[in-house]
Structures are given as C-alpha cells and as structure tokens.
Amino acid sequence: MTTLQTRRYHITTFGCQMNKADSERMAGILEDMGFEWSEDPNSADLILYNTCTIRDNAEQKVYSYLGRQAKRKHSQPDLTLVVAGCVAQQEGEVLLRRVPELDLVMGPQHANRLKDLLEEVFDGGQVVATEPVHIMEDITKPRRDSAVTAWVNVIYGCNERCTYCVVPNVRGVEQSRTPEAIRTEMEEIGRQGYPEVTLLGQNIDAYGRDLPGVTPEGRHKHTFTDLLYHVHDVERIERIRFATSHPRYFTERLIKACAELPKVCEHFHIPFQSGDNEVLKQMRRGYTHEKYRRIIDKIREYMPDASISADAIVGFPGETEEQFENTLKLVADVGFDQLNTAAYSPRPGTPAAFWENQLSDEVKSDRLQRLNHLVAQKAAERSGRYMGRIEEVLVEDQNPKDKTQVMGRTRGNRLTFFAGDIKELKGKLIKVKITEVRAFSLTGEQI
Image (tube, rainbow, N blue to C red; front, side, top):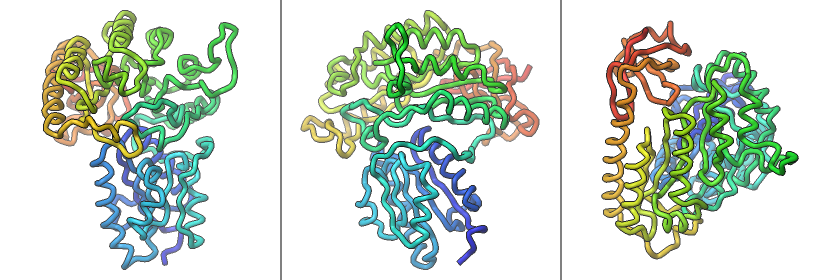
C-alpha cells in the first residue's frame, strides 16, 4: 500500500453552488491530511463523489460513475470510495446495499467531519453518516477551484417545505453561521487575493432567524441585510454576490442595501417557479405572482439596470395549459436576463411525487421547449442594452474556444469575451466596450 503522504484524491461534483463550496472544503480537509489532488480519477487512491438529487438524471449519473470505480476496487482493494452530498443523505444504507464496495456514505451536513469519518474507514469500518448534526464551524481552508471568485456559506439547510423539493430532507434544518465567522473567512479570502465573493444559502433571506437577539423594533437582530452591512468593507474584496433568494422573505430593506453598498453586484437570483397562483399554492411557495412582480418592480425602481435571473418549473402535477401560459406571461412581462428552467421530475419522499395528476413526458417537454424559446428571445432583448456600453469585467479565464480571448463577468453576471492575455489579466477588473451582444453573452474590446 502507498504511504499516506503520497496518496492521491479526486473529487467529482454534481449539482449546485452549495455542493461546489462543500467540495472545496472537503478538498481542503484531504490536503490537510496529506493527500494530493489527482486530475485523473483512475490514478487516485481516494475518490469522492459529491452528489445531487434535484433531478433524476443527476442521480443515475452517480450510479454509472460509481459502477466503474467499484470494478476497479476489485483489483485495487486499497481504493477508498466515498459518496457525499444529497444522494448520500437520501439513500443512506441503500447505497451500501447497491454498491457494497463503498467505504463511506455521508450527507452534506457532515462535510466538515470528513477527516474523522475517514479515520474510521482507515481503521477498517464501512461508515454511513446521515444523522442530523449541528454543523461544525468552517475551520478548514478550502482548496478553492477558482483563483478569482470564492464561495462562502452563510446558512446551511432549509426550513421551507415546497412540495416538489427534496432539499430540506437532505440538507437538514436551517443553521446560520455567525456574522463574525463569516467576516473572518472573508478577510482571509481578501488576504489571499480573491476579488469576488459569492455568499451562499439554500434560502439566503432566512439568514439569522435561528441566531439569538431581537432589535428594539422587534425584528431579528441578525438578518441577511445586516450581514451585508457587516461584511461590506472587508479589504481587497471588490465584488459581493449572493444566492439564492426566496420571494416570501425578500424585503425592500435588502434591495435598498444592495443599491447603497457599492461592492454588492446589481444581480438578483430570485426563483419564481410558476406564474400561476393556484400552482404556487400547490407547490407551497407562500407568495403570489403579484407579490413576485412587486419585488421585481421595486428592484427596478432602486436599480433600473439590475440583472434578474430565476428558476422555473414546468409540468408540475395538474398544471393546465392555461396555468402554463401564466408562466409564459410572467416571463414575457418581467424580461429575465437568465432563467434556469426544468421539467418537473418527482423526487423521493416529496408530497408531489405521490399525487395522481402527473403530466406526461410529452406535455412536459413541449412546455419546456416553448418556455426556453421565450427565455432566449427575452434574454436577447435584455442583452441589447449593453451594446456600445462600457462594462467592468472581472477576468476569470481563457476562452476555451478562442485562446486569443479571455472571459469574465460583468457586475450583472453577463459572460463577456474580449481579446487579451490571461496571464496578465486573470483576476483583474477591466473596462470593456461592448461591440457584440448575444442572448446570454457579450463580446467587447478592452479600453
């Protein structure tokens, strides 16, 4: 067996930004344990799949990846196989029955405990860690995948009970980190030279509800808005983004803070899921399409140019053609800069999965196509406003399709390409004049 010093690890991450942030923390723990990163999973001694269960195909993918490595383990018994994340939480022991070669199955709440869990494995155990725990503070130094933009978790879990969503079952109840811990992590990120931070929460507007303290006016002492004021002046961080917001808790006070604080980017990600009130009620979302529209109007009142992105589901059980058209109407009226769309897929253990009024795959895919067509049309109209403008772009990488170009994002989160040398420009904020607009990206020239 290779000595622990030279053991190599590989992590494959599926799913959302929260998972990416969890993977970076787990990579940091493995490197503290003396593991080295391996680009090639087949030359790694430890393979970790950080999984997602939002859609069925994400889950199937995990099983196919796992099958390949389980075979490898028969000839290399020292190989350590770990499944982390939401599929691990949801399937638990079942995963071990399906893939007995697995060494460790761990839910997302256990990411910071990876070292202790692996020590049990190296002592000869086969470990399942899916019980609810209080999340340990983020004490590890993540191995961040980007050199330009860093994720910072501010709240874990979710207390909402949307009828289609598996997240509360797999990520547990809301647990907010303290403002001090978040600021300390951001100061460290600033020292490491990251110009941009994205604050993450499954439902970021719920931040602080579980922390003690009330103001004289009777509101929670720690809200997400207060947190933005608390961390805004961290040195060397130039840009702050955040996701994901929930229309039920989104306040004018937050919009005002974003308008006032120069580092906070003018970009809001606020899922609406459906444009029909009856469907929203069935989904248990806790707002109406009228309330959603008022939020967007309020954002545009304070920041006329703000970018708005969202998530939408088509083909929810029982959705009629007329109800679907209400979603199209909302999309046409709001004009989103970007919209993540999905056809409803039943998730294990969620109420909607058991309803009888499921729609056919044909209806779902027809509606998805029609919605995507409208989304592209509206995004192209929204992109038009950038033509000829000068935008500040944070350079992240080389354009993989054209090595003479670099790419980065505007404050409004539009992907932008322009000619330049990545060695010279990576991580810099560059003024770019926009010369070409497309639905979801821009091209320009450096000024």
